[in-house]
Amino acid sequence: MAAASLLAATSLLATGTSYARDGGAKTWQAAQLRALAREATASGAPGVIVRVDDGRGRPVEVVEQARWARKGHRLKAGDEFRMGSNTKTMMATLVLQLVAQDRLALTDPVEKWLPGRVPDGRAITLRMLLNHTSGLRDYTEDPAILPSIMGQDQRGWTSRELLALGVRHDPLFPPGSSWAYSNTNYAAIGAVLEEATGRSLAELVRDRIARPLGLRHTYYATDAAWHGPHARGQEPDAAHMPPGVPTEYRDFAGAHRDGQVDVSDNNPSWGGAAGAVVSSAGDWHTFFTALMSGRLLPAAQLAQMRTAVPVFPDQPDGPGYGLGIATVPTPCGRVWSHDGGIPGYFSFHATDSTGSRTAAMLVSTEAFAEHPEAFARLDKATKAVQTAVICAMFDKPVPSAAAAGRPVA
Image (cartoon, helix red, strand yellow):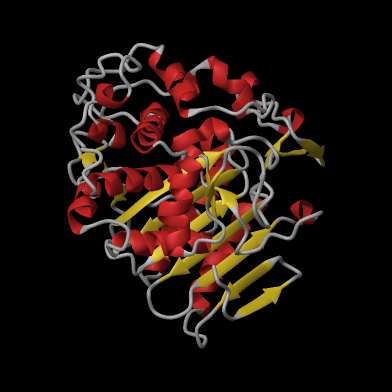
């Protein structure tokens, strides 16, 4: 796992594109985004959803879908999709809500809540889990999880089972001494949340976030079932997977058609607290706005969430990771963001520090994000879309390098 309400739409059925515009003022913005999204579909993406809200009127929404991907499903701006590692922002929010209620503390050692389950658990705090400084190795690198990632094993996974996979490997470094992104950190966070509340993660997401905010398409998935209309995630079949993809990542389970595998019905529970949430672009806008404006967290806990450690020690002003959310400098301004990858779905979500501006991008395939060299054209096109949605969020033109499809971040 790597990391919409359409109020006034023009539907261009011949190209599979729709976008909202506010009195014509945002037509240029939609046109730039649409052109870049089309390049992504021409480069191999089954579909692309873009949603940008610059805080001034109606959002811009663009939907592009390759002709071959339209059989059986027309992609829509409000479709549900699997959020992958964006889930971590919600999990961190749940932890910080409990911190505000004095039910958890960021300084709690993991041993307090999960005795005997994490080696060196007395030295690893909840804060270290949330900001990826624990040193725990990523459970997605364990061979036992690979059949579930590929959809060949449809079993359900629990937080404690996922945690056990990660901690059976030697840690990367002593707790607190460095930074390394690891899904095992959030498997541990999921287990702590369940232990501290006596409730399931699905119940916590529903009752503490989705229902209070009126998020109709947001939920924690425990199996392959969807709650509403959803994007169909697809990956190339083994015969059409680029040569650079390792053998073990070439054969996805799912319905095969026209050189593609529909992975939408595979069980995502292996993502757990690190990646099992489902949502939509519009719902995530509401979530980010509520989060950054202080509706979900008191000021003290929101400040803790936004206290970031450098991803690169030699770049103190570069990318940083807070508690379940990253801060990233971009050509058009610094954002708070996360991305998420799970087979069939790669998404990116960003907001400004107030939550008044948000941006979202979905690409309905994900192998390219795991193996960018093998999917060079699609990777390049997707980076251009990502830069463009951030610039549109700040109401700035796309830099010329991005418009040409060259990464600029």
